[in-house]
Image 1: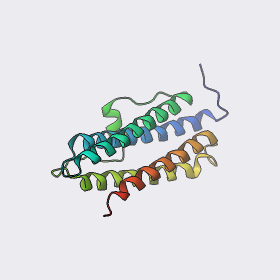
Image 2: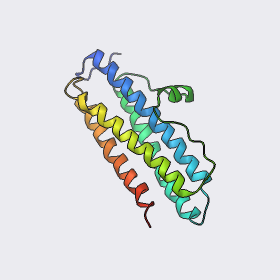
Image 3: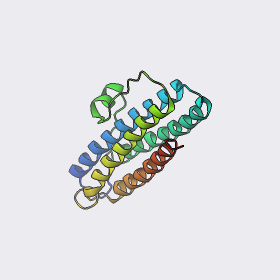
Image 4: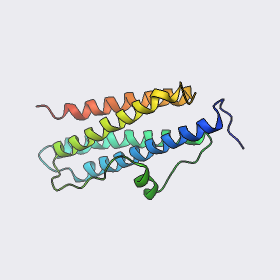
Length: 158
């Protein structure tokens, strides 16, 4: 059945492509946050272990919301590691040092990068692609990532 949202079919295709990239970035960031949760070491292990758990749980909710938005628009969400790796603009993390500040700096950079991507996508989401709903959805994601970035950044100051 064809999805009727009031947005032109060709625009929905472009919106779904952009959301596929967002989904891939969110998934890669989720895995990197899990890595931090599992592998953080140091005197602050316990507090950081719990902090990263809160962050990865928030990211899994974001992932689900993005995938469901793609489905709402009548498209299929990518759901394989190879697709995510191909679609993401983030890099996989390889670390030699598992201290909290190293993980925080890496995750913070990724949140900032996702915020920039989302801001770019919202520029023409409503005016060119005529998708107010996805524009609002992405704006909310920006706010969520800004808050998550603030929480990460707050750990970098003594």
